[in-house]
Picture (tube, helix red, strand yellow):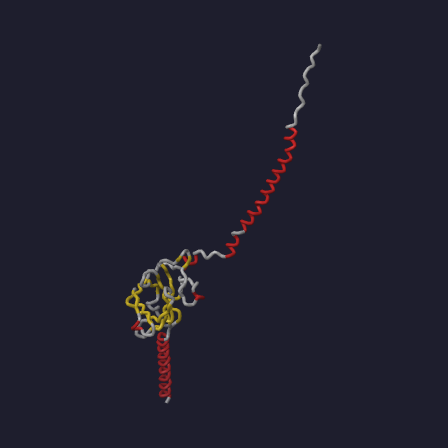
Length: 238
């Protein structure tokens, strides 16, 4: 009887130890399974791209967790008549003073399940018009940009090429450009004229003083012109 009871106790102890070991192993495996997932890499469309003309570059970046957007990053000629180029053809007159450098030109691009991005918009500052847009990566350094209205297959495609990593932004040039002359500055230039006019008055006073001084010398000249007494001739003696 005691042997049978002892056997049952030992068997229960072994089962408990085995269950604890199994639970520990399962916990380790579960921890490895639900650990933090590695961060997803950015889409290959992200980066700086030369447009089809090669005279401008657009920086495409992640704007929301599900969409891409882009803005003008570089311009071959960022200035016009000594001033930064602005969005002069925008149909909204209140937006025409926006600088072209840094101007948003892509937005709301959503990744497709089959690859690429679509359902976004593109803005052309040369015309002041917006279109639907899609992006298709041809290879690591080539991007096809298709602008369209409603139906993509009727759109027009352009090839963009990836720009070098050291391409400078046009933003510093635009910030360093001189701004328009302010009215206050223009008004300030008139003050020296008033000062000069005021300074002319003392000069007139000096002339008057000189004239007065000459008038005081006039009597001296008059005295100098009076006839001098002539010496008397000696009287001859008889």
